[in-house]
Length: 187
Image 1: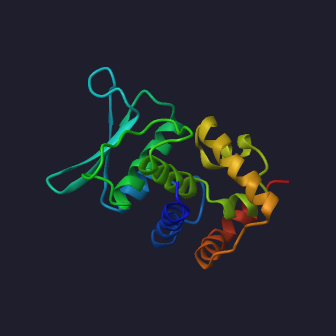
Image 2 (image 1 turned 90 degrees about the vertical axis):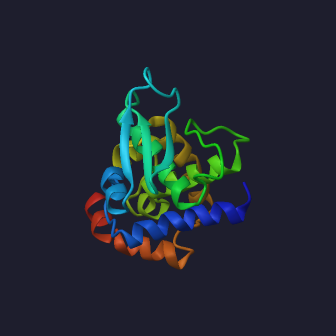
């Protein structure tokens, strides 16, 4: 994934957190979508599709569909991933299917995954709370083990490089979450 695409997805997640007034984890994907005018609906994968989720527009209105058989944490990530597709302008231009991330993935899917992981588990908030393990991310953000482990890999890199609060947008997100951070700091 090109850095410019990564940065676009990451910054969009921060702008959504700021614009929608989100200041605590876990981010409620259902409430967020409702606030943004996006309908979210579950489907039974034995009747319809076999993928985790998909996005479409019906009569000009955006809909996110997710597989009802998924565990809650995975479903939340899928909804955030599909919201990323909508906000990044991918819907109607590309064939989109939500599934587990893998190396060499399509850049469109990578962009939606970056958006979802940064929306549901913002690094500056995790850092402020003192998060140091995937288990802590799972608990705090209510995401799947796979998503939490993937996010923790990036957190480890950010810890090594000391790369927190380097962007004005990120600093604003950190400030917006201050009450939550002070109440949730892990010891």
